[in-house]
Length: 114
Length: 115
Image 1: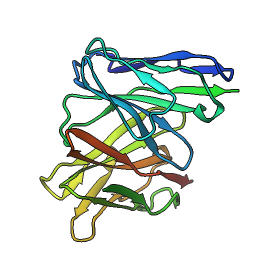
Image 2: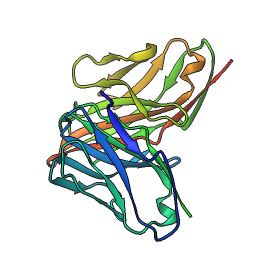
Image 3: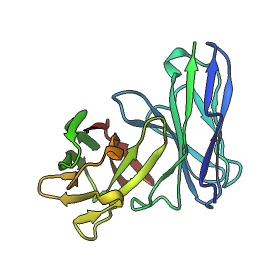
């Protein structure tokens, strides 16, 4: 199993540009989520999905969109990038939505918005 | 409400000496607790998790943590630090609430190991 994969690993955008961060998992996990990691703030939940066709907002959803058309894929879209979105983004998945389920993380995407 | 407090943003130890990384939590429900490690420019790796079974949890690489409900703590320890332990460590609380798994990360503790 490849686990959780993310592309790209690095990206530089100009303010106002749009892009999609890709996330895929091959573990047949129902629960997937996106986090951003900023220095001194830990990881903050952006959006999550409890299954194909079902998404919801997390702690910091503004400026981001998601969709979940398949179990495997959970892309994160930035519609109009802003410097405040400069961060490291992690995708995670888990088997279920129970609180004992371990989340598996992708390697991250480092995004810089100029 | 749910929160996690990692009491030290940086911890420095000498190689071969014990490691203690402190974590306190609050949760309105019976939570599960996790410790993750992140090496520089890498993703997050699960060290161990507590899920209401034994209160002393053993993880990978010689780490362990003890769940103390009365103190709402879940401190991470290791008897003898190794150079490869230098990384950032995150304490995480998770509880199923309002129809979804609410996961809250601490702000992280950077562990420095001095040769």
